[in-house]
Every structure is written in C-alpha cells, then in structure tokens.
Length: 389
Picture 1 (cartoon, rainbow, N blue to C red):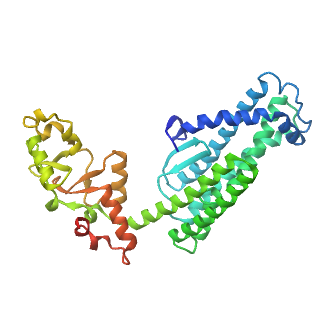
Picture 2 (picture 1 turned 30 degrees about the vertical axis):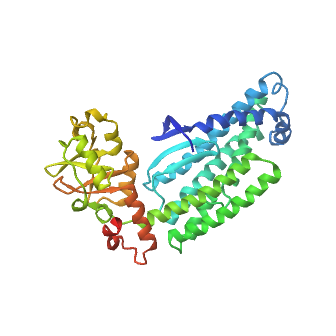
Picture 3 (picture 1 turned 45 degrees about the horizontal axis):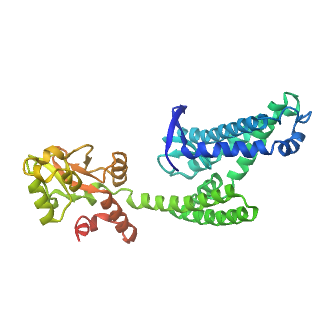
C-alpha cells in the first residue's frame, strides 16, 4: 500500500484511508453509475414491488447514485474488517489499524495468531459480518416498498455483501478463506509448514484468478490476483523470519563493546575523519565514562565545512542516543524499535546503564540467515564472531 492518513477510530481501532482509496472510489462510482439500468434489471426481482427506474437516471442523478453506492460498499468493507478486529481483540491481539485501500480493506494485526482456533475465528468473522450486512439490507425489500433510490441501494449493497463473503472465502491465502485453510492445516502441523502449504495453494488460486481476469479483460480481477500472489509469498517469508528469530536476544547477535570503536564527545571532526579513514568505519557510538551519549556517522560529519572541522567536536553533530536496548531484548522487538525510530541500529546497555554493545538491522538479518541454515538453529554459536568475518 501507499501513503495513508488517519480519519478517525472505531472501538479504539484507528481507521485509515490509503491514498489509492481516493483514486479507486470515483472509479467504482463511475462503473456503478454507468450501469444503473442494467443493475436495476438484475436487482429488481429482489424487491417485492420491483425497482422503478424513474428518477434514477438522467442528468447527474445516476452518477450521484453510483457515488452513494460506492461509499456504502466501502463502509460495508470497513465493517467486514471490523469483524476481524473485534474477534482478534477478544483473544487479546492488538489491532494496529483498519485501512481502506485500492483492493478493499485490511485489518492489521501486530502479530500472527499462534492458535489455530484463534485464526479460524478471526478469519471467519469478516465474512460472517458481510453475510449479516447482506441479510439486513435485503430482508426489508421482501415486505417494504420504499423510494426507488433506497430500494436500489439496499438491493445493491445486500447482493454485494453476500458476494464479498463468498469471494473472501476462496481458499486463496492470505484472503479469509486462505486463513481458514491455514488454521485447519495448523491443527496437526507446525505453523510454518501450514503457512507454506496455504501459501502454495493461494499462489495457485491467484494464477487461476489472473487467467480469468485476462480472459474477461477485467483489470480489477487481475490486480487482486497479483496482490494475492505477492501477499501469499510475502507472508510466508515473514512468518519464517519470525519463527527463526523467536527466542533470540540482542545479546546473542550484537557487536559487544570490546569489539566496538568508540569516540569521545570532545573528539574534533577532523580527528573523526582521520579515524574513519584509517579504521574504515562510517559510524561510532559516542561514550563518556562508559555511558552512551549518542551516535555519530559519516553523513553527519560531511555536513561540517572543511574549514570548521578542527574547531567543531563530535558532541556538536552527534545524534542523541535515543532509545536503547537491554541485553535481554528480543531480536524481533529490537528490529521493530529500529523501524519505529527510523534508525539503522541501536545501542545496547547493561543493567547499570553502561554501554554493552551495538546491534543493527543488518545484524538481525544475518542472524536470520544463520538460524535458517543452521541445523540446530542455535544463533549464539555463530555470534558475534561470525558477524565480524
């Protein structure tokens, strides 16, 4: 997805709109508005008195109706995702946000459900909400004859919700049906193995869906198929990454203090450049009396004019120490903190607050490589000496 912005919250869950949502909304409105007469013909049998097309077309009325239907459709998509979120919260999982975007909605959990019945319930909750929305929209049409605009919108949203539920239950991981499939596979298999199987099935479904989209000349179906294929592969790799690093702490993968090159805050920028050249390093922890003060990098130093490098010191340009890690911090938690703070690496301190080492995103990635290819998956055996070779 692209850049998104928050528009509010529902039940304490942030609701975000991706920029692609603003692009696809008028497209949906146009597609619906341009086919009002055909849609009225198809939906009329669902209403007790049919749907009178008079007043639905002409001027800009069919475009306004298309826009209203598109808005209603995305509201229903948000309710679908809210169903996932409420079910997840019942099991104690944190929901980062619900985002509406180009291909619908996405409820972002901060972690993968580890119990098969948790994922089964969370995955099935979305389609259940869609079915309920569809039934609630269609039920009044059997007995009530209302204004044509209202009847059309209820009929359209009712049918679309039922279709949304059916489509989402296709066993195409990571769609809802694919997650249901993974949950059932995980009953008697390790989660990574179940994910791999569900991912392969999902990619196969994506290929079939893409071929159908090509034959039908439907770019939306093709886009959905491409998304499913990429997402199925990406989620399987992400889970493998998390499984490989579960239980690994920064103490096992960091570069310890005895192997770090440290710099004093009173070091001149000219001297810093000399050390960077001779030691072939581009960043240094800044330490005073064993306590970390910050980091200084080559990029920071290069911003100082050459004529000022003898007079200016490291303390004038260093990055404040910011968040630090303890020796027992998990590697995955460290990586999340690096990304949240937008830093390539973080300093590690001991219980007394003294500098103990430094860990970078590159260290975490190499730890994953070691864990993935090590038969014992014992990262400690390969760290930290293996990092320095």
